[in-house]
Length: 565
Image (cartoon, rainbow, N blue to C red; front, side, top):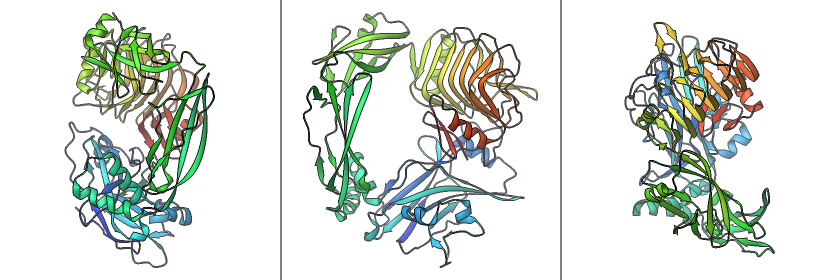
């Protein structure tokens, strides 16, 4: 391992970096990826470093483990460096962004060396990343012993990767996620939200105490319930860091404050980041939607989050219940007594003030682990919901599916098809796949022929499905003319076309990156196949789909980074 560079700057007396070796993959990726193809981004915000004598501010860059392994398999790269750049946020506005040109270019603005003509920043680097408890590879850079006059100064961290090859060095910078933070703000949040030792509380408390009585602002946001929507009013009030601030509870004719939902007081945080939200119910509205609830018929109990409802909940569908801390627990026996079957229904939820009509989605099972995906084969006619992201531990395919799989906006990571026919070998006319992300979905093959990533025979419905596969040639092999495919997005660096065999299917409202092709393979309605990733990002910006968000250099599918440039 190469040495880790440590720089002393005028803003800070010490810079520190922490790392560990990565654990081996559950099963290794079979193909490599280029630097352009991997996803690399910053964790939102920053965290507090609370080591005695080395406390300060820590920033973290993240990468899916499958991408990390695939990048290291690329034999074109003779050397790969992972690093973090940290500087005051005001530098970015004054001198420009932390990017390859400004940091490593021939006319770089920034330096981590002794060049007094350039702006000093902190830089840490290594040839390893570490695996965190969530299965992501991460790189942490921390600044410690921050000078007191900089306690309230906001800093920003930007991760980078430098990959050397015969043609030169390529750079990739992590996509930022609102990570401008001062050490006082991060310390305050940690003191409010985390379980800490006495020594840690002492370290963090010293930052907050040093900034006590420093002026700051607090936003008070009032939400007024109205038929067909919500009206919002905001005001800004002055406070001081560390001070307990309470919103003035105003009375409005025809409205009542929903105390259960509102947050009317808080510690005033540094960086002007404190917000108090007050929710007012319109007393003239006798019935309103209570939200959407998911019921798991296989669970020992189901919990309804009723914290947003006005008043204490007394009954659900006529049955007396007890609400505790904004939640109602329904036992398996009470669910069984309702004689529910999978599918959507409506419930009545009665509070002391109001009766609500709630949309309830009933599932045969809410899946919480990759192993539980086996139920799709055990009962292929069932209705299923992903209750969270799941991570593959072995090859898997759904043989024949007639039911509903709703991803709930969650992601299936690193799945490898157990056969050459894809993740779904066959989906019938009644089969529905929606609201799900597949990252690093590996297609199966016969000999040298690599088949479809998502589905082989497809007659059903696919909507809001996002697939990234490094080796697949197609998303679908032979979708039928009656199939409904809308809002499907693909990343196929080895892709030839979206559909292999044209049986009359129509692709609607979506786009796919094809690294080795330029057509969809079938009829299209507002569907686009592009050959470069930058065009893919532009498509995501110009053709908004459910669950898709995009910036200048990234695309997110629901909460999963799908592409970063």
